[in-house]
Length: 157
Image (tube, rainbow, N blue to C red; front, side, top):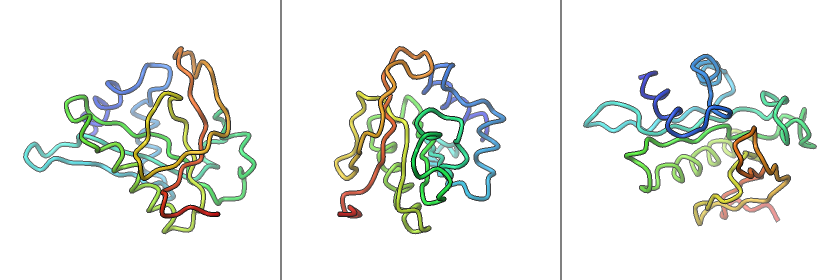
């Protein structure tokens, strides 16, 4: 199973933002983590995954380390959503994002943040508030936004 997850990771991210086997295993085994896998029954292997953990676990990331909620333990950081190439464009990534947000809210985390490509289009059920933009995220040549995410039905007005 771990080889399938590593294959998805490598196909989804450029080297500078790709998680290592060690970092993925460590993230998934944290007692405060949310780790979701999509496994297709007919091939019995994961085709997508999402990982999140408390914001405090990411105090070295630009944006996350300067978040005003750092240390308040009220924010879940969505660190990764990845889908195998052959399973993309089927809504799996969006479904995983919605599920992480729901689980985080149900576990007492009113805030969910993430770094996403500035050009990314989110599911219609998810809103984002851009907190900071990074023009060349970890040397990728792409702009990424540090955002707060929420489900439209969970808006806090």
